[in-house]
Image 1 (cartoon, rainbow, N blue to C red):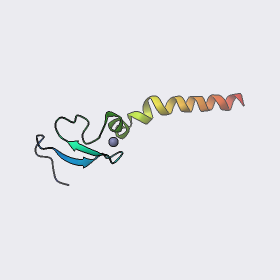
Image 2: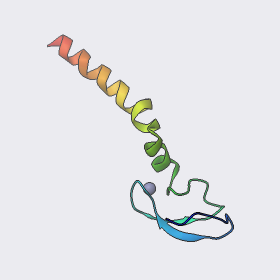
Image 3: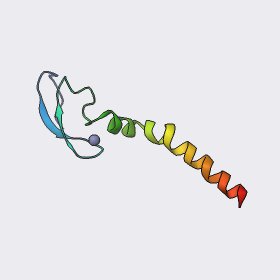
Length: 66
Ligand SMILES: [Zn+2]
């Protein structure tokens, strides 16, 4: 993998998460990802934040009722 020497040069790469074509440029603040969502997933913010924990709590609550 070549190193990125210039932030001025724009080129196309694939989002590491969803494989969507992404313009790698200084204007794309989510690079090398396509969106903030994909970047958050890669950082683990999606699963450890507002998504997984409420689901687990809800599940154990149902188990207690049964
Ligand atoms: Zn993506």
